[in-house]
Every structure is written in C-alpha cells, then in structure tokens.
Image 1 (cartoon, helix red, strand yellow):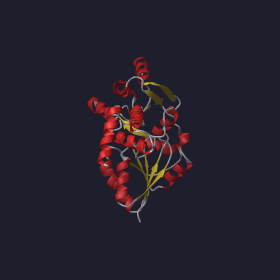
Image 2 (tube, helix red, strand yellow):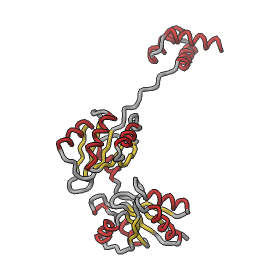
Image 3 (spheres, one colour):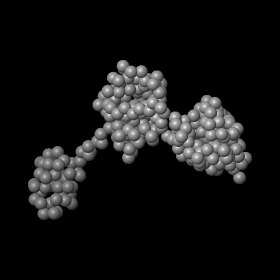
Image 4 (cartoon, helix red, strand yellow):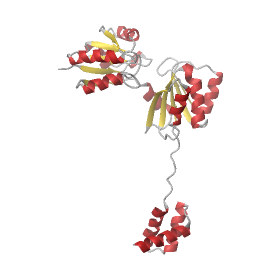
Amino acid sequence: MSGTLYLVATPIGNLGDFSPRAVETLAAADFIAAEDTRVSLKLLNHFKVKKPLVSYHEHNHVTAGQSILARLLAGESCALVTDAGTPAISDPGEDLVRLCGENGVTVQAVPGCCAAVNALAVSGLPTGRFTFEGFLSVNKKTRREHLASLKAETRTMIFHEAPHKLRATLTDLCETFGPDRRLALCRELTKLHEETRRCTLGEAAAWYTDNTPRGEYVLVVAGAPEPENAAVSLEDAAAQVLALQRQGVRLKDAAKEVAAHTGLSRNDLYTAALGMKSED
C-alpha cells in the first residue's frame, strides 16, 4: 500500500501561525521534501522536529519528484513544504501532486498561510471572484503580453512581486489598466513591518518613484468594470415588439417602447416586426 503526500502550509512570517496539526504532520512523516532545506531546518528546529530532509525545488523537481514518488509507492509518507506559504500554489509542488494523482498516491492538504488569500482579505476590494496571477515575468515583452491578456478581466487580480521589480511592474500596470484603477499593496504580510497601502495604480507608481520598495509584496488589483449589456440585435428586438403586440399593445406603440430601451430605430423595429409577422 502506498504512503501519503501531505502538503503542509508553512508560516509566511510569523511562526505563531504554524498550526499544531502541521507540527504533528511533520513529526509523523517518514521524510520531508523542502524547497530549501536550510530554511526548513530552522522551522523544524524551532518546533523540535527531527526528520530526514530531501530537496525539492524548481531546478530539480523532475528527478526529485520521481525519487519521492518511488518512496511514496513503497509505503513511506512525505510532508512537502515550501519556504513560506502553501505548497503547490504557484510552486513546482503542483507537478508532484499530479504525479501522485497519476499513480494512485493519496494527497492531503494541511492548510495554513497563503499570502495571496490573506492579501485579498485585507485589500478592501471585491473578494467574491478573483484570479491569482502569481509572479509576472522578468522579460518586459512577456510581462506586458500577460497584462494585456487581462485588460478586460473583471475579477479582482492578485500578483506576487519582489521589491526590485516593483517599480517596473507598477509602470506596466498603469499603462495596461490606467492610473485610476484601484490597488492594494500588501507588504511583508504577518511580519513586523506589515503594511497595506490602498490607493490607485498611479498613486502607487508615484509613491515608489520617491520611496525604495522593501520586502515582499502582494498586489491586489481591482478588475475592469463589468461591461454593459451587449446590444440587442434587430431580430431579437423585433421579437420583443411582437410580444408586446400580443399583449394588446398597438404595433407602433410597441416599436416605440422597445426603441426607447434598446436604442434601435423605431421605424426599423416596426418594419422588422411587420416582416416577421408576415413570415408567420
């Protein structure tokens, strides 16, 4: 019988956010797969957990994933952790999860911190529907193409960004979405210098022209306004005219009423309705 892969979310800054269940899972696992074993060792030492560590990150995930899978299929259990946050979210852990799914290995999540969700919650922007876009490319052309594809996105958008790329990203966001689009810049979430700045993209770009970006950022950007209802076709509007006529409204009056709320020509509606009537 195969073992289980546990996706253990780790603190994004405050060790007090690590749950008792997460500690118990690490202590019970046969081994731990870590993004950076040096970072994870500090976490394990803090909670007095002693377990074998193996390295699993974007540069070795293909070979390391096969090695971990083999151990899982042999019956061992593995806890997957990243340096901070939830494994498999914008993270090579998604490949390991897919491997496990393809080979019948059970995967269980041990929930905890997720910077994107925390930032969304404190942003003050709509939270009912959102899209997580992760880190934008360092390549200017690719980054701008990515943003261009989101120009009509009406859901709230979430991006991760490093301090040295923040100014360029804000400039591109302004050019794509306009300087008046609302934004929440969440910096150093759960850490000592946590800060959320709610403003427009233009205000943020101006602020960071004069102030040096420090710490890791999550950018929560308002979506585009919902598009107005699509224009009604002449055929559909003429059908509305006939429906009103069947309710006892004179054809000319029905055409006038439908023209008022569709913006179509009253004469065109009258003519189209007559044509549909004759076809019937």
